[in-house]
Image: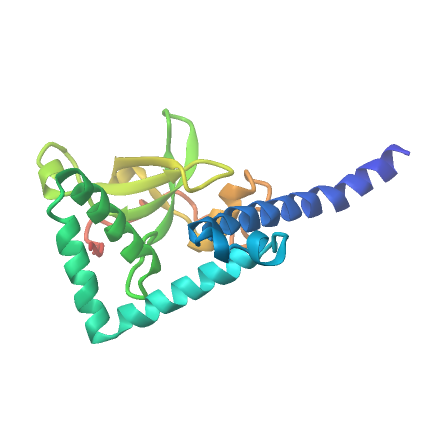
Length: 215
């Protein structure tokens, strides 16, 4: 009997979590409909809510925004909008930082996570996976004795939260896995191991003469 219960859990647990995540996403996106006038909301028009309609509305908004941003007049409008936000002290720092991150993540030229690294964190003797994001800023390197690299160490199972650390280049090791494989490994809490395995940690992740792109 225990064997059958475990077999049932193996089937229903991933299916149930998947359904829950999809339901949460649809419910969150449906909140976009609240920006519409009350007279145009589905409950007022049809007498009931339409699950998933927010996804369609979000897609249309993103598509139309992309169409506008891709032409000459749209780009000028966006520059004017950014110039206006740049005059607001507190908003300027938030918007510019978020925009740089989003440009790196979503731009075809961007490469937010360059390499998957094995790093010693949060204490000596404890190892975890991090991602190379670049090199420390010149204002920081003047206080560092050795050459360092900038590393993002994500939390698990939610990799969108984590820690930004600067580690000596000689103390990090490049892993023989893609960034996607490393993310799956982190999200699964180590259950889904990458097929490629690990590169022996006898050499540092980056040789002293290696070039790191910065944006």
